[in-house]
Length: 132
Length: 128
Length: 287
Image 1 (cartoon, chains in turn orange, blue, green):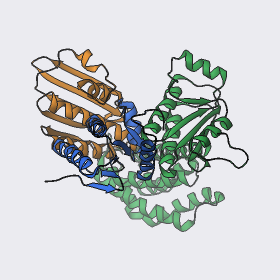
Image 2: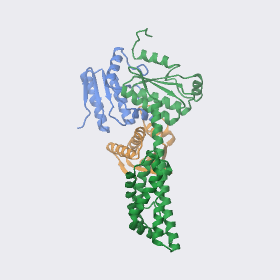
Image 3: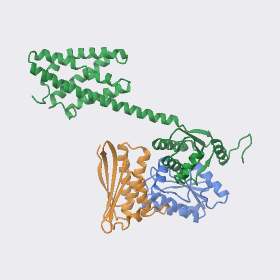
Image 4: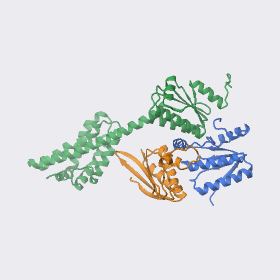
């Protein structure tokens, strides 16, 4: 029952693949429909960011088992320009206009755990986790 | 090339989004719709998302673009068939779909469009 | 001899299988028959299945660690048995008795085989009892998990029953909430409401909280998220039954209510809903 897959995230077709992989994993781990939808949507946002702002990268999908809890962890990594001001990037933009803000902060709201590492010129890594 | 079919229903256009949209498909849809609204003199557009299990900010932006573009062409847009799980997720995500009307299904959507057009509505968020 | 499993035990089981089975079944049946739950033939079938599994595991394994793969066979069967008994309403003791009652028949035959060699007999009996105790404890753990799952499911079913969504009129649903709401329960209830909205094509849902004594921030937020979700889907919500105390709490918590229609009573909310859907009552419409 262990899941550990790494997928390329380079084109918009890849986003579809990532969504399907995350959905299948969430189903396998027993998440209910709303939980599945939340994590797949978060994955979609982050995958899109990886392409639009990171120049493409990879996505890692992992199942977790800690202290009797089951979780699903997604890590999106790119070697793009990085984010200069993470706090600003996380600020909300509640509009359909979107931009980097909505994707990142949205993914954060849809997850139980959220972590981001990024430095200008060194790329970005975003990790989200959802526990059952 | 793969395209999303646009159907004519009375004086409205109906688009059913059933597949995972990628960028090119979204752009093509917006172009096709613009053309059809003008060509068919459509007064309203119904976007049926009842098949969508996931709506992310990309789709949200696309819907917003379609609504804005339709308005410029003097047509109203209604999004129909949003699934509960999707609605709950969008609320959490913070996507508001401002300026876009919604209805539970195509029939209600058409009813809404007719009322809006009869009242000569331009754009009303709260008044449904 | 350290922790070597009872090699005599394997022989004993092999040589005296039918005798052991008979005694084992008899003992269990006399304990359990008063509960009127088990048939002797079903019990015998279970025992006949288990004994060979036990023997095979003893032969294959190096010690009494029943969590090793060699013991998969007996463990799987015991898991199944415990789950079934948990579901059928057996007590934990009645379930553990399956393994425990095997001790006597085994000890008797061990004594018969080993005879006067007190040391060897003591050793074998020790190993056997250690093994069977572990297996019995295993059945109790599985039993407990089975009961927990049943309780969880019953709780969910009760949740569904205690918060039914009612159709007041064509296109108008009402959800009368009663009792203290916790975060988990509220979420389940709200998802259910949204699902019913889709199924019935209702344009308006009235969430009545008259029967809710207190509302905390989390619950208030869930309520508002549900209203927002319903609106996204194309339906409207009205919250009714907000008593003065709750209104104060909500304002204190800084929760944003201005975008939601609220009414003091369910009746008021219903009237508004009727008006909105364009329906009119014969007895004097409120238009």
